[in-house]
Image (cartoon, rainbow, N blue to C red; front, top):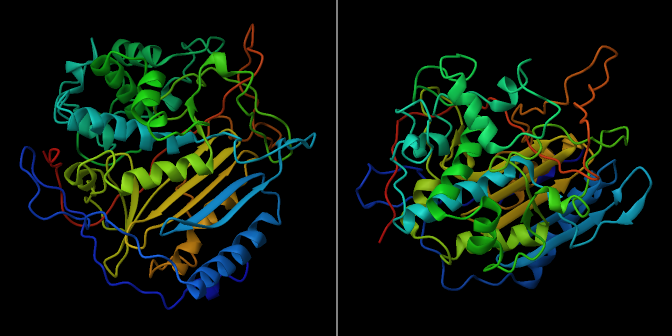
Length: 442
């Protein structure tokens, strides 16, 4: 990635997004976000040309390399740049990618799980301050609330780590229920639970696998069906779905850098933390629906976009399903990454500027995270030398004896095709005050 310096541009907005959430059961008095505008100012001809030209130069340079995937950049409802490069099978150069090619979003899927949970909260069907045990039979930790699952402060460690223990049958495709049952059976194991709730931030896929089960319990629908009825169908996200084995024939595979395909492994059916497939265009519909007040009250969005982990200083924080950066000049950047097998994804949302950057790839192209640097085109986000790589990792990415990534566990009877996903890991912790969540505005 060269020639990035010119992206530190003169576009500097002084809107401050303070990120404060309110106390439980109190309607927010000072919201962190401005109301969604009824009309979005149209880009003038020179503005459109300016944004499009720089965006084109940025991504044309990045995509000149090994990138296999899709990119979309938009501002004020106008798509500035959209490109599809490569093939569904990059090794054989077969089946060109297009606007309807769905990628495994990996941990970007968490944005849907979080907002699905918050939709139930807004509708009065659950309270995010409820203990998770209220909805998960046998769950052994009464102090863990839905909120601490959402903001990764539950104290639960990552199932992608502890489910690799020898006693787990890795020749069987595991489910969310299997993850919960393991937690119940190993409740005293410190590899499963730290012993302390709300003590510190620890990014853990376990939280979102459990949230998917809570959604199912409260809604009475399977998680894939709930997501389709609540978000995908109303927003006409026609190429978006939650993976199940019935999707094996259509789900696009992912690949190592060498071009070798990832095989399906025993954790690939667990959803909520991963397993949503989508396109850049459908994700842009998702982004716009979250901006325009179509789905959520302002109080709920304020809660989702507030920071909850302030025990250590730093710019990075996590809301309810969203990563964020608190920029020293007062601005706030909302985003989420993904990595599972060969899938690496980025979803960047600049709320002040009504700008969005989406990049999806399936051939382990880690430089996709450098899309964050383009934020400086739209506002003073000071990202020109930064990357979105949060240190997240994939269980099949650890080097084997010869320095090659180790082979995933194979099945006795493997399915014909496979999904691919994001596995997460520890993430940073952040700025200076503790917060709790506000309830939905009525």
